[in-house]
Image (tube, rainbow, N blue to C red; front, side, top):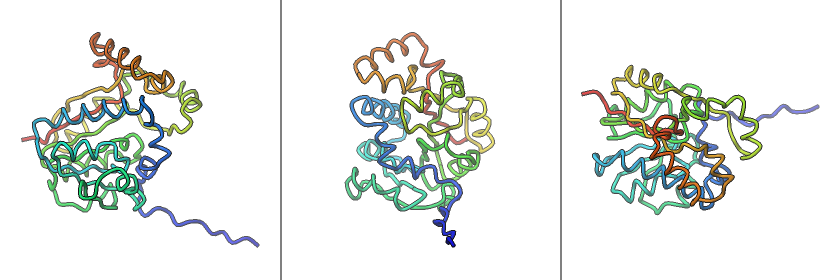
Length: 248
């Protein structure tokens, strides 16, 4: 006779950030090409925050620690949430004590007051969240000035997602399924939550899986520079980092 003992389920309904905060996920951004990816992400994010110096920032599901130090070093007060206590491990290893605050909580029911933070952001989270409308609603609720998030755009090489997913998974090994978004559906959702038409900043034109296989930041930078100057990145780039401001 076997005892059907199963581990208890996670306490929250949306816990995609547990994987994002793992060392296995961090390996996707290891090496020189990975550093290049994170550099581009940080540069765009900090550029979007130029008019909000010293803003208080809530990074929802930010246990991946990709932006904590760039934000803190730029003078921002950073609070990070995670869906489980394990989500703070990479933060504790890679960020000096006192450079951030951390709280384990439900990303769909954030334990903060309305408009408590100047800016609320979420990276590596939206496309893996089933109740993504609720996530955006909560982000908008606790933001007093702006929200920033990243997502994979339908208007890019991602249009071949269904055809190429298995190929991509074979190349990368740890690819997860994810949701693609159009700019229009995100505009509409933000509008419902009383936030303005977003600014869209695509990161790359060449798919990231291709950059990983090239293993050459120099070649990647050349390809992306050509794509930027030709306008291809603006039209067909992905992932996209967007900023949306609260309506005045």
